[in-house]
Length: 290
Image 1 (cartoon, rainbow, N blue to C red):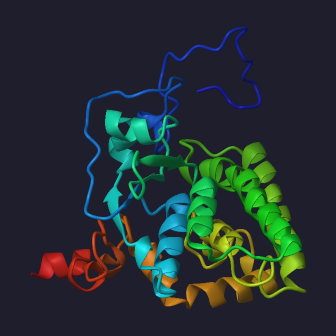
Image 2: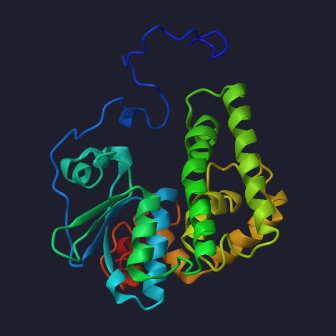
């Protein structure tokens, strides 16, 4: 294979081979369904189709936080979408999200089901639906929205950029790893400087904190790409303080478990969630021990 220093792009790019790497089998340059598969529907109005990646965890954390506040209408069914097996290209899921990315949500509360896709849009939809985790002060709400959209715009450099070239690419090249390591550390510095003077990102704990924590909090806690030492995350002391405070919340622990189908700790894997009691009875360690 040619070195990235000598590669010359063709005049017209064509898709004539898999790109290699961990996710090569599910990457393609076209949209749409690849197979027919119905979308399951459970007993609750809110139906979530997801996987416990950072983008998926954002939504399950919010749902569990809403339930912890007493919002019984936030009860939900969470269905596992295994992106490694191409579940996101099933016709039912594509109806919920034409972009074929997790998470996707269907709200059956009022008449015709409402689809919501893109994790930031789902967070905002649910927070406004239940009137929680969004500041009521207009200035603080504007600040919260700025940080929420910061996360949506910045995380692709962390995930698709740093995470891909550092952890998943079939070959390691210095330039992209250096480029995206620099950007990831710059982003961590942005967060650290803000948190030096603020407990949360916009007033009280909000959906902006949940969104940012799911990526950057888990990164500094050593849960993404095995890159904590490489990025010297301990130096971002304010981010670390904030990340640990969120990690200690019981609803966050539950949110991390939902739709988790990977990792060595089976007690943290709840493949599907249809009732609050599932956390006590249906995690993978309990199912395997029964």
